[in-house]
Image (cartoon, rainbow, N blue to C red; front, side):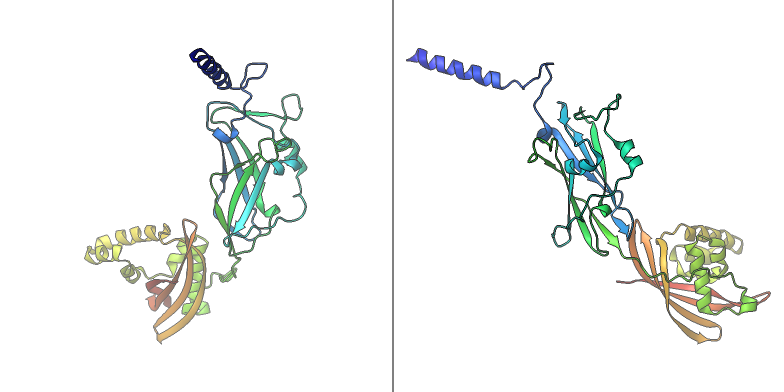
Length: 332
């Protein structure tokens, strides 16, 4: 009886030992597919915010993170690659976005350049990925889906290692990035504002603000500074006001020069657009102009309301409206 139990145990141990060895082909290489165990799929987005009619390109990356070689068999024809790399897009409410009918148009030059071939020119039916090697595919989402401005969309990618033989075997992306479509805004900046002569044309406070912000938007700081009365305007910035007020007369110009450099750095964000909300005339030499401002900080839009105080500053050629102070409020 003990001998029989020993024989059965020995046979089970031998079978288990044999099954523990990986399957190898005629060349002695492991033929087992480790895609599920060590293959990672990720979706890469160049940015999170796109404007209307802007191409939306994503890159699906397949990476081998293990020690064993991965064998994948992507569709070889360019119009079939979307079968190996499939993307599901959902909106912010969790609804799946329906794909547009028909396959996207293919650029013949791009198809020829990206065709998967070996050195002889034959289509490659098998791709081997070694440790840390990647296989990538770029997909134009705007050619596959129609997106609504103002909505947020989430992306999930699915990679089929051998869709022609195993259509139910796939690996889902580990990340699910999202993006938004920004609505095209009405251009509030007056196009082609001329550099008017304030003596001849008699500029009003509202026109001065147009010239001031129009110059900033174009990066023309020399023209922008032309409409600022710096000895008073610097008082609106606590960082420089105290140093300016406490400094000797010979040091004030140096502090104002530092202040001008500070303004050119766009610490409060890059000006995107503006709209004048109203003008209040205090008296003949003092006015206030309210302006809606949108700036962009690290690709995030921030809205402000600026209240500019302008006063007539006497110069050799007469008195001119210039910005004397600024109050900025964040708008919700």
